[in-house]
Image 1 (cartoon, rainbow, N blue to C red):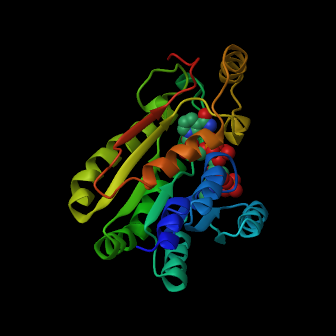
Image 2 (cartoon, protein in one colour):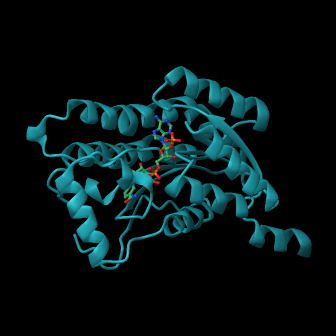
Length: 262
Ligand code: NDP
């Protein structure tokens, strides 16, 4: 390795890699797109809000990165497959998938907010599976060729802890955590690392969609009691996980605000 390429490998450890990030129009996904682009990856950003994605791509390109926006609803399996086909034709396939789009709509079960239950299940479980289904063959092919690929799924501390009113959301995230653990058995031998990220409370748009008054009060109280994580805190963790040597697979990373003790 020449001095120049060694310096480049340190400064841009994800150079040559192609990252697909869902839920990239705000919060954790948006911040992670900027982080992995700064580390040298080509990034493909997915979400529904095309304008927000276009602004993100412009920022990444202005900083010398390479990015493509694809406005996709991940609950639409055909649209996700079309996005995967585009990534294959344009960049030769993804080798880093940050499967992150999600929604949190807490409410006591007795309120029977069935539309909100369904919304969370459709996005956090079915949408997540649509993305895994469409991109798995690309990850496996990339790992065979490059020696490593990453599937990083966003779960939540709600997959582990008990929060009254959050049962359906927590259930969808427990699915993500356990699914990821199971997938390591299939993908580890194929050199695809599978990681679950379990953040505690992080200051994003996630909380803006909450309609239940009790849950909103709990969140307001939590905001007063502690300093929340920022999306950049999670993005830096993703960057750290993805830049490890190929033999190192962080299976499950829980990141909490220091003041959040449950
Ligand atoms: P945001 O609300 O800021 O981000 C959610 C993202 O998902 C947006 O980019 C949104 O974009 C996208 N999204 C929503 N619906 C769809 C859809 N149908 N198709 C495609 N994209 C969609 O919240 P966060 O950044 O906090 O959330 C990211 C992940 O982190 C979620 O899975 C969440 O559950 C998880 N998490 C968050 C925590 C927190 O405290 N913030 C804690 C633990 C986990 P658009 O509307 O443009 O489609």
